[in-house]
Amino acid sequence: CALAGEAGERVRLEVLRDGRRLQVEVPTKPLGSDETTKVLVWGGAVLQRAPEAVARQRGLLGEQGGAYVAAHYRGSPANKYGLNATTRIVEVDGVPTPTLEAFAATVRGKRHGEDVRLRTQDLRGVEAVSALKLDLNYWPTYEMQRLKQHQKASGASGFSTGGGLFEVRGAGDNRATWRRTLIQPSTNLEA
Image (cartoon, rainbow, N blue to C red):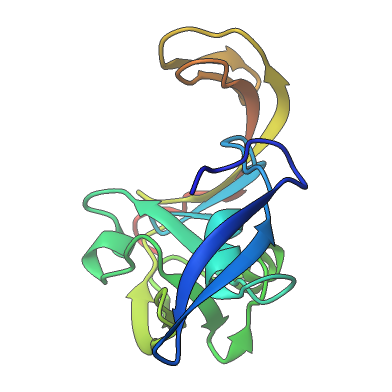
């Protein structure tokens, strides 16, 4: 089958259900690469709302996606304690975190050196419970918010424009200005 490029177009698919081949017609929806508007870096994990393609495939529409782990930095607590990409954090210390904002509000008061209990789900919905020890000295919590989207960028690079603003140039026509805001400042090493 050929894939359609416009929203509302329909494609015919052949699927296997209960051992039978069925022909179904489904509407298309274009998905862009610029849907991420907010990122939270916590414990070295890069968190965001679940990408729409993942959310649609996994039935995570609405307020049930949790904080989606897009990546983690090497050497970070997220890396050390196995908080891997494509995992979703759905609960922190017994408090449900159905959205990135709920997650941010729940972890905001956590202190350096504190153990945080996380309930996570992988893409298949398999749950796990683990703990992560915060290191806010080296891995402070901050938010990145996209302010505006630009057009016609070439190459891939990023640079600071001062005042917590960063310009990020992606490949092709994907270029944006982001604001970085420190949420949990580093604490002294004795804490």
